[in-house]
Image (spheres, one colour):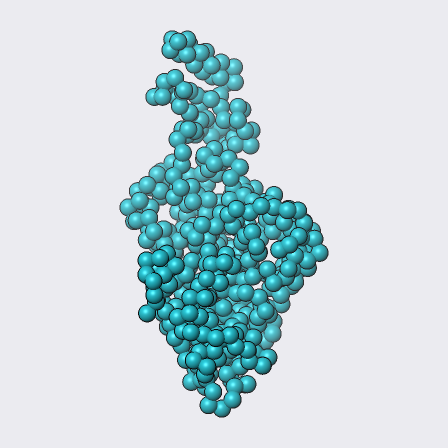
Length: 454
């Protein structure tokens, strides 16, 4: 039996080498002799699109098909594919999560040595780009998993600073979402069905890039100027994802136009729950506390045509919005993506501080829904909803009675940045108190490790 198998392998090898007239492109393990390799032409046998060329013609690759790629290595290559570049900041974050040795010796060095990635930039501002060879490798290992059509030869824009800056920030966005369990693979058909009114069962939230989103409906193809990084689709809602900083603020009219267009399309074509405009939410990802504070500090008198993130907070004041720190955040994205989790944490804050339901009459008090000890109107602010922070500050500045105060409750890890935001206006900060709970205590309580939060 083994002899017959060996003869078959020999004949197939001979036929491929002589009949097709090409050398080895890919290797895979023989089902009979696991240590023996069978040479076949990937470009001819599997996928004609997979054939790449170098200066001498056909590109030679050697890949073991039945050996799975590690999750970390796949994620590294996928970010290079979808973002255009994986930044040094993203790599540093990966080293924290997976270990310096693993990222350096098991991911970067092997991929670079085989020519799947190449390094760009300076020592303090470096990154890695995917090569054509790396693209073919990823397609072989995980066919159809990612939207390979977004790939662009990285050499085309290595030195175009605005494009590279967005690509680098996009890599951090993608890594943050993937680390939190959001699928960054190819979900074009599911997103298209949701946008166009077909029922789609979503078991795991997924992320799509703006390029994919614009292709789902012809009305979206006219949207220009938005700095959205993509959209998270869940079983209950669609979340627009932004990642502003000091150098890259958001332009209110562009983001309003985008939100209005998407919600109008959903209200007319989509089925519940996506046709409800309140199920369009906003996630702001920030690299640092300083960038977050800066986004609240710009004066309103600046030119209306100038990008000001603070104004975007205003236009989304009736939507659920969240601020999430990509480096380290006290809550998980799942806690805001899933309405049940979010309500559970709200109830923990209400129970811990014995908050009662409360409603103030006032245009800027829409997020003041509780009261502490029958005295302090209270805002539950553990998601750092920028609209709730900004509107409450305006309420304290313009509508509050003399001598009255308002209370914010949040995680203790968020108090420093919240205090700095409030201190932008000393008059406002003097009228707001802050009470906190350690996030570990909250999650220990949820998991049943403790029975009471002190």
